[in-house]
Length: 253
Image (cartoon, rainbow, N blue to C red; front, side, top):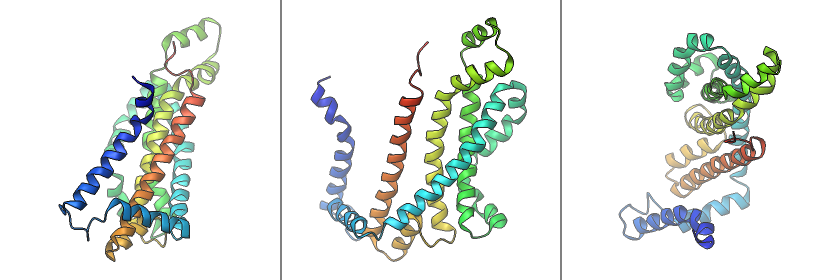
């Protein structure tokens, strides 16, 4: 592929989206009252960002997402590695893990409200619950699918159970664990934004989006949605970079 085309190819999607957005507004296929143009929306996003009015909401959502993700990582990775190390143990809880992983976490918001009330921790708790299942499942899958040749080689060289676990299984599972971490932080962000919408909140992008919708401030609503999308994209890019740096041997024999 031509190097110039390869360089500019990632911009094709955003340009196509902006073009379709502009076309819908220009042809009035959607009322301008409900869908302002991309230029107006981006200008509003720039204004509220530079003026600082959106920054507290952005940071509040980022903080809750980071807290939920930290809890999910601390709980999910060790549990996943432990489950993956014992096939019988994993099979005994497989139904529960798959059941709760398949249950929409947003459906559990009323349950979490009963336990934690309308508090800030409630948003973090429901988000961490959603993310921990994804992280745990991927960590367990990574351990169970570790290359048997490396495990056998370690055994032949006299490595004990703990040494094989520490020096082979943990490292072998890292690639799949990072897949879980990337998915986990995305899910954490989604649930945090949803919780900010529907659980009493004084700040956050979700709170800002639902407030703007109720006040028919569509420019601010779309700008806040774009801000949430940018945050999700940046978090995903961060984990892609970490994955390449930390698990640089992934895919090698």
